Structure formats: structure tokens, C-alpha cells
Image 1 (cartoon, helix red, strand yellow):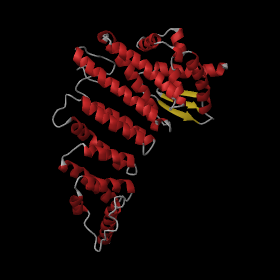
Image 2 (cartoon, one colour; image 1 turned 90 degrees about the horizontal axis):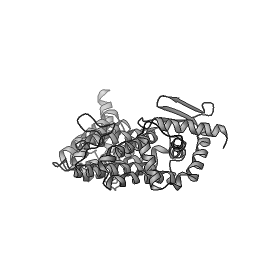
Image 3 (cartoon, one colour; image 1 turned 30 degrees about the vertical axis):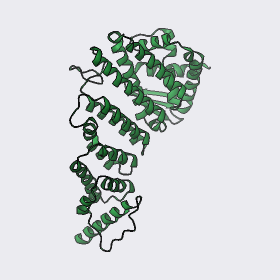
Image 4 (tube, helix red, strand yellow; image 1 turned 30 degrees about the horizontal axis):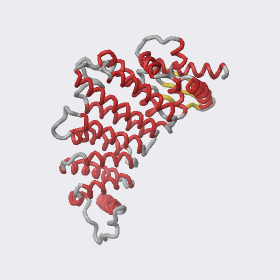
Length: 374
């Protein structure tokens, strides 16, 4: 390993080490820049420099880190909460972060991080709750922050990485379990995100705030990479997991309450990105969790009114309109806004074609408006 490779590795690893509580915006720079630029939490690195740092990180990982015992993994977790690292710890800090920055599907590096977290969590479950509770909270929050940096940065592969989204879901699941343990065992967990009233990520009554926070991550990732099925699939799984653990929400059902609290925000995002079929299908999923027919009708009317007003004829939006109307028995409601056409046939009534019928009616409505205005 050359001195330049070592220097790049230490510089990039140092950034990850000193910004564990900050969401970084990471971007791959053109060759004429760099090799590594930093402005606060904004990081730019050329592909060549990243490869050089990865070569060093990979060698350190397979020479040292893969052989760590559970005790060494636990020590590395505990060192995160300390204000100073020893020289030996500093040599290993940032290794897997750099590996995942270079290759977001590096399962070995991701599973190593998962194993390290699991060792710490098992220590908590073995009866060290009061002693390790705050440490576990800080370490898991640092992991979420790192994942947010990867998923929300303009990194084309990372924003839609199934490995990173699945790892985030695993981390969130561990947080839910630890909150339940703290509730049963009667100890509190504090972390940098804990508010003065005891809420934050580890509070017991912040389920809606939590799903809103995660929705922000998913929507940001979907803006970076349109039609991000992995981001919205994550939100589906998170909604189900939160519905099962939200004991503080009883009436209406947890699933319905959580769906209601984010449906309008989701639909607003979809109307701002009307070509994104993944977003529309997530909105349809949320409507399935809300059995109130009037509520579903109001959402459908909002979308149709938007499409009619702006003259939108994109396929994704009208597929959502069609599937929502047919799935929830709202076809008759649509007739009010989009009346039948003269001489309309039923040739387009197949399961994959009926959306064209609604679009044809909308186009006829637009044509009538133009004729009236002239």
C-alpha cells in the first residue's frame, strides 16, 4: 500500500469517525476535482481516490476485523461513546464505512456491522440494561445516521440498495425491541436525540413522529433515484412493524392511525412526482390500511382534481386512480368528476387497460374546457 493510499484512507476514515452524529452528503466528483474535498458535512471524493481508500480498508478488514471476537466487537462499540480513541482503535475506525461507500452491496462488511451491533444488544438483554442502555442507543443512532448519509446522498447505487434498506429495517427492528425491553424492565434510555420531555427516538409515545422521520428518508432517496421500489418497500415493512409495536395507539387500529398520519404527505409527494409509480403504489398500500370509505374517496378526489386541473395524462397517476376506484368501490364517485363519454365502449375494461378509460374521459373534459374558453 502506497503512502497516498494510506493518507486517503486515514482522511476519509477520520471524516466518518468525527461525524457519527451528522448526516453527510457524499458525492462522487469528476476526475478534475479532488481527490477528497470537505465542506462541513458535504463530502466529495473522486472515484480513483475512493478505490484507493477501499483497497486499504479491504485489506485491513480481511487481515484484522473479520477475526475479531465478540469481546473485541463489544469493545469497539463501547469506544464509539468515548470522546477519544486509542491509536489502535483509530486504525480500524471507518473501515467498513469506506467499504460500503465503495460497494453498497458488500454483504460481508454489512453483516460484520450487524454482528457487532448484535453483540452489544445481546449484552443489553443479558441484564446490563441500565449500564448499557444509553450506549446501545447512541450506537444504533450512529448506525441510522450513517445509513441516512448513504441512502440520501447523490450516490446512484446506494439510494436503491436492497442491502442498505434491509440493514436499516433490521436496525429499526432492534430499536423497537429495545424500547419494549426498557418498558418492561423499568429503565429509561437516553441519547443525544432524547428531548427534555423524555421523547425522541427512544420515547414511548412518538410512533407517528418516527414514521414521519423515516418517510422523509424514503422520499429523499426516491428523489435521488426515481421509482425507488426498495425505499417504499422499506416503508411498507416499517409500517407493519410499527403497527405491531405501537401499544400506545389503540383506537383506531395502529395500522390505520399510522397510515392516516402520512397518507396526505405521501400523496402530495406523488403529485409533485406524478411519474413515480412506486410512490403511487405506496399511497395505494396506505389506503388499504384505512377502511374509512369517505377518507379514501377524499384522497381519490384530491388526486383526480389535481390531474384534471393541470392536464396530467401520465400513466402512473391514472393507474393509481383506476386501481383505487376499483379496489375500494369508488367507481361511481369517479363518474361525478369524469362522466361517461358519448358512444363509450367497454373495449378497455381489462384489468390492465381500464386506466385508459379514465384518461380518455379526462381528455374529453379538457377538450370541452378548451372549446368553452374559445
